[in-house]
Structure formats: C-alpha cells, structure tokens
Amino acid sequence: MKDISIGIIGGTGGMGRWLADLLQKGGYQVIVLGRKTKMPLDELTSSCAVVVVSVPIAATADVIKQVGPLMPAKSLLMDLTSLKKEPVELMLANSQAEVIGCHPLFGPNMENPAGQNIVLCQARGNKWYDWLKKLWLANGLQVLETSPERHDAIMAIVQALNHLNTITLGLALAETAIPLNEIKKYSTPIFQTKEAIVKKIFTESPLLYKDIIIRNPDVGKILDIYDKALADIRRAIQSRNSDEFKDLLEKTAKILF
Image 1 (cartoon, rainbow, N blue to C red):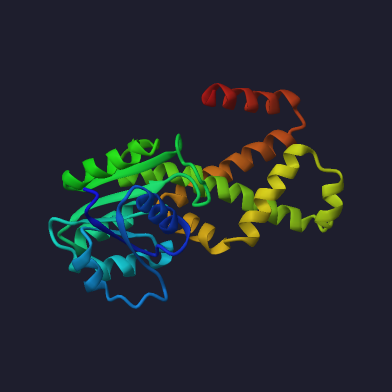
Image 2: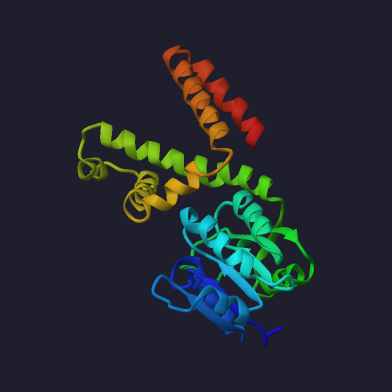
C-alpha cells in the first residue's frame, strides 16, 4: 500500500509532524496541511486515500465537519487527538469513510517510539484498520485496542487526574508566597523532578492541558474522586492519629499494589 498518498491536516507541528516523518521514512507519499497551506480540502481528499486530523483539540470538531463529507466511502478518516469519544462520533456522523480513532501515548519529540504505546479505536471498516495496526507494529509500537469511551475514562486518570495534581501543586506553591528560587535551594531530587513538570505545564502549552482536562467527558468523576482523596488526607492529618494516617496509606497500597 505504499503507493497511496496520506494527507495530514495539522501536519506541520506536534504529532502530525511526527507522523509525517514516520510515514515518509517508510516510503509513503505524504501531503501536509498547516495554517499557511493553501491547498483546498477537496483537493486533499481527492488526492489522498487516508486523511489524518491532527489539530488542537479545540479545533478538531470543526475540521472533521469540514473534511468528513469530502471523504469517499473506501477511504480512511482518522485522528490523533488525546480524546476519542467526540472525535470518533463526529467522524462517523460526518463521513462515509472508514473511521479510526488513534492516540499515541507519547510526545512528538520522541525520535524512536519503539516500545511505546498507541491506542486504536476501530469505529468503521476493517481494511484500513488492519493496515494501520500493521504499520504501528512494524515500527515497534505496542498497540492498545479499546473503545472511545474506555479510552477517555482511562485518560481521565492518566492525563486529567495527573495534570490536575500537577496544576494543584503549582497553585499551592504560588500560594505559599515563598519565592520558588528560595524553595529550590532546599529541594530534594524528587521535588526537582516535580518542579520541572510544573514548569512545563504552566509555561509551555497551558491551553493543551486545559483542553485535555476540561473536554474529557469523565472529568467530573475525577474531580469528585480528587476532592474525596484530599478530604480523606485532611481528616487523617487533623485527627493527629498516626494509626489513622497509616491505615489510610496501607489500605490504598493494598488496592493499588
């Protein structure tokens, strides 16, 4: 199938650029569309058997609604966004093409993704799904097959809860009113690692993390869980009962490990 052309909308940066490089190294013909590209969408869809939507989460719905109706039934429409339920539903509703939801569980700067995980959500059709799965496996990726709903539920933990915890740490550090440079003088290696993650989220792409958290359909459940966890910790600390705090940690350890 290496004689096919693959179009990537949003392929000039991030995961779109990563995918374009991987496909081109594999001998595929790739057409990349970015904000400054003047190629009309109908020209892209008529030239490419596969179209990949790789734009920011906030723009994904509009792009799918534009490109979906232009896709022939025998073609493939897929996305690379961090959430799967809404994009997959939109691709199904706005196109007759085969549809796959895809989420690489790593960043675009990873030169060799071999051994990393990538999620596939098969939504419509088998031909392109088999091709795509083989493509990932051939490049050493670990393929996780699941439903869009299950994906988003787990991403609410892996991404939303994880980033929420980091953002909370950053907000709390700011509330201490002690300059971070002063705090860092006393920092442990673990704190240094966490501080670097806080800096990344607050300074590099805050809007990305905002969309990952706010747009996840399961984020409400995660907020309730987070609130309960903080309340349990507060209660154990305020009781000044070391056994209660110890029991809380031991009970959690048995559940997790």
